[in-house]
Length: 128
Image (cartoon, rainbow, N blue to C red):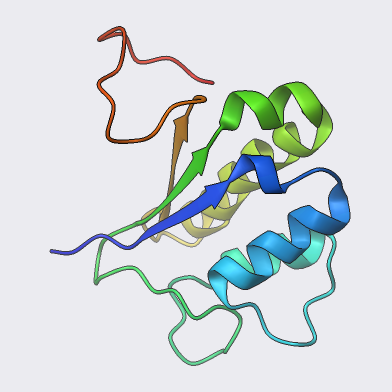
């Protein structure tokens, strides 16, 4: 099973406007995307809906989409409220599905200020 990986460069996000620009581009949100966290949540809550046109990314049957946030530490330091909203709303995407008896579809992965091909300095699993 191939797992879709959507990579977001946290350095590109400097404010709410750029947050919505980056995510709309990466996930293929529709032209009418409302550019607020409610609209973001609605678009990503439809990852498992193949026909609604809210996003161009789909998980495999029974699988997940991995949202990899590169330079997560930089984003968290520069825009802590946006980073917190990203984490909280990602959890809500999955909670909405769980409440309907469906499996989660969104997994988060954080890369600190290093390329993903570099070996981690620790084997501990930490949140950026």
